Length: 190
Image (tube, rainbow, N blue to C red; front, side):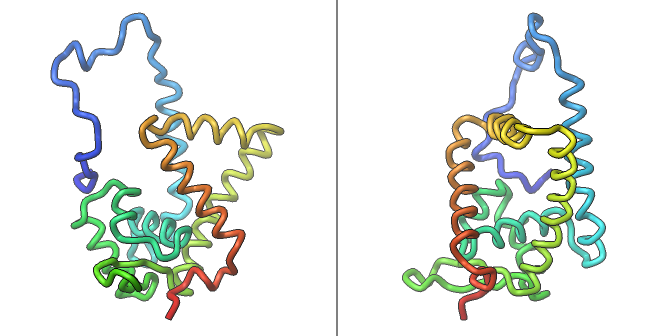
């Protein structure tokens, strides 16, 4: 995955002792593999829709976060996705050229590039979120009461501790904006 930015990632272990798992701790191969397969299927649901448009998972991530955070700065999106400017540039250019995302200068700072979904971008983002929501809803229903909160706690705790509060604030802010504004407000303001 060449497009991941390593600047904010912890340094890799350098010795065999650093790499080896502690002998006193059981390795959670079952959970590791379940996470791999769950992620495969979770992102696989939208993959077919994206492929028909000539898009991939990077396009999905950009659409998702721009739809949830109208007026998001390009720099903020880079920080969320942890990808290089070059990788985002390719994906963003395609989404803009094909009319799914609109980019505008900031009102106060013309150097800022603010991102909005177009009506087509919102429709696609919501279709993809709907596919993933259907999978999650089936699982939560099968697991019963309390499953959503347990899943939220587990996933939030999987996030690196130094980034966790930032991520939880980003989600809460997007949820708050979604409740406050009608869908058309996510679009380009002009």
